[in-house]
Amino acid sequence: MLFPKELLNEKEIGLFNSLSTPKLIQDYLDNLKYNHGEDCKSPRKVIQKRTAHCSEGALFATAALWNLGHSPTIIELKAINDDDHIIAIYKENNCFWALAKSNFTTLRSREPVYKNLRELAMSYFDFYFNTIREKTLREFSDQFYLSNLENGRWLTCNKDLNYIMETFDNLPHTKLIGSEAEKNLSLVSQKLLEAGLLGSNPKGLYNPKVD
Image 1: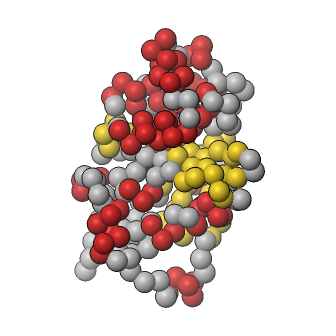
Image 2: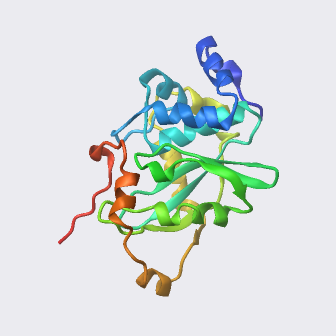
């Protein structure tokens, strides 16, 4: 299915057409205020509100990539003692890229150098941590294709789209590390934590309770 421009208004079409490269899409995401709400807005609402969290950012990014001719695809990075993360992915020259919205500077875009999804997911591993410095990434999901979902009406609807994210509960996930490796993980350095939090609003960060 082609990008359904007939669902969009002239202003929205102009915005998507202006995001003519992956870098411009990521720049747009980075300039959005982080949304601390629990609902998941459509790309239309993201444009209107100028806010997004990771799920909303992934939906917006995959919509923008769809407009560029890529299949609209997202995957889930699954964590323990931390929030899961949704990223928009696409493939070019047989390598995977990723675009993402995150309150952590280390969990955003990835360059097109990853030969498979495991390589792409592992590129996040050392930089995926919570505020008590634990490395928390454990799994990644199969790809979820959005091109045929509701004939593209998720792009512009007013309803909460968290039901799309719930689809990941039923998708296969692949483990990234074994139990022995998990036991021996070190904490990230304080400086890496500070770099990850650079410019972030603490209200939007996962902060596990420490007994």
